[in-house]
Amino acid sequence: MPEGGPPTIVSIAERAGVSIASVSRVLNGVGARPETVRRVERAAAELGYVPNAVAQSLKGGRTKQLTFAMQDIGNPVYVAMVRQIQAVTRAAGYRLLLHSTDAVLEEELAVVRSLGDRTSDGLILCPIRITPEHIEVLKSAAGPVVVIGSLPGDVPVDAVAADSVTGARLAVTHLAETGRERIAFLNGPLDTVPGHNRRQGYLKALADHGIVPEPALERATSFGLAAGRAAMLDLLDSGAAPDAVFCANDQLALGAGQAAHERGLRIPEDLALVGMDDSELARAGWPPLTSVDLGSEERGRTAARMLLERLAQDATAARRITTAPRLVVRASSASRRGSAS
Image (tube, rainbow, N blue to C red):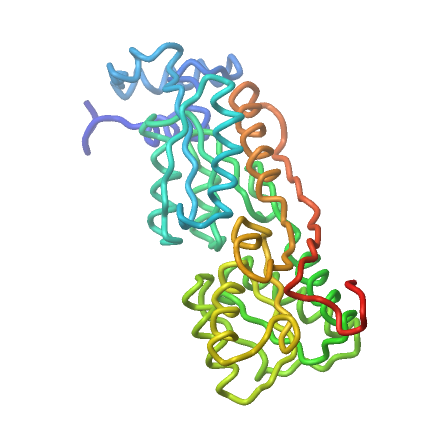
């Protein structure tokens, strides 16, 4: 046995001069080029690698389990994704493991690294931030990963993303076209991908309609219902006096609606309200919430199919798919000009 403990797929990859993912495929019988197989097997023998007995007992080296890691398992958007991912993967004979990361960096990195432990055969990861650490660990993942979100072009991982910029632009354009001129924006953290992109769409739509952005009309805290209520109360108490509010998701919008009612404002007569995601929450409140459908179910289905395809054939280049947003108009943003936009 070499100094420093038993050999790992990392040390085998270094000795063989191949990627960690290639070592994982060879050791688990998933398939690789003959030359890669020879190099990995030779390096494993030289290092004295002994296969894990439990992993070897699994038929074909597969666990028949897949993992979906998301920020918050209670968020209706992720619930919609889970339903679609599970439907697709179950039909292919896989069990689905769920991991709620709370958007903690180390949690997200750990779940990618866990592919090397063979606890699951592949991962669907839905992060709200993409950091250099994410990129590094994704590039060296020991198994197939599909990201629900945006990735730089040089990351060799499949990804399916929402077009949040266009979605936000649709929402704010709708409000402007229904006669609103002081359109506030309640957002999540600006250092997240959705927070950044939705603000870009908000600003572009204001510019499209000749509306000068006012910093006093923006709040950026977090994406939860309580954050929406608190941000809306702060906005109203500041004297900003918006006639419409665009919220970066439906949870923020419902919290904003609660605050508006507490302050005696009528929706949509005094204040129009629009959310984003078109989750079940959009249809649960009163009045029903206008929201932008970002294709959560479609992204879930697509990610699951991409992962299954990657498990079957790993030779293709990384793929990028973007779902188109759709504005769903309901009573919370009824027009001031006599008809809905």
